[in-house]
Length: 301
Image (cartoon, rainbow, N blue to C red; front, side, top):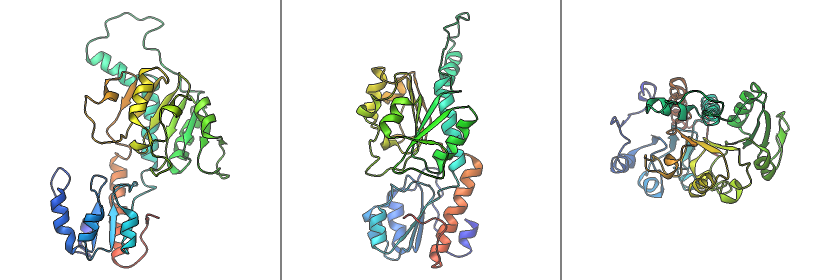
């Protein structure tokens, strides 16, 4: 904020919770630029009220909360913060893989609830070995590539599917059906768009191994949650680990939260102090550059 205040008058919402919709709509009228987060809906109503708006900077890599096409039709630049959260998100994804495969959360809960009351036996808390398994990555962008690098340390076979083959990466390119059929862990690292909306539905899930796990830290709506719950209950797949959901936040009564073979985290892919500070720097820099009529670091295409 100190950098931003050097070049602009800043109206900052300082409450602990997200800014109320009415507060945003009132203040955007005379704004030249706005800095928003994933929870702030930038739709036609807001854009139409902002008569002077030149730039919308979002403190996130995702931008599905912004009507980008409408903003651009009004000559408004839209910016985001990709790249800086790549490694933090890849760390979390691999943490989710290990947690769900080795039943780490389940074991922690067992002890905390006072239920570790049986002597050791060969069958106790058996999980899936990650080392040497096949990792299937859907979407070989920055985050997908970072996950693949981590997988090499576990001697995993890495296969991937994306809209095109990436000649610059040294991993096996396969079609989606092959990836689902052969992977022990299916990791989703795609953007949310009309092609990927509900990409993983019951039909796709039924093509996975019964011993396989689904990992999603991209966007919640890439997975059709009702179908995932059904697939898990029917034993079509062994489990799932999710950091994102179709509607957030979710509560303890959500169907996914009732299943023991599911690991859930509250959308914390980029939640390291280092990454969040870098995201803030990039979001502010994007805003300042656009306000000055210069090219921002990361403009939404």
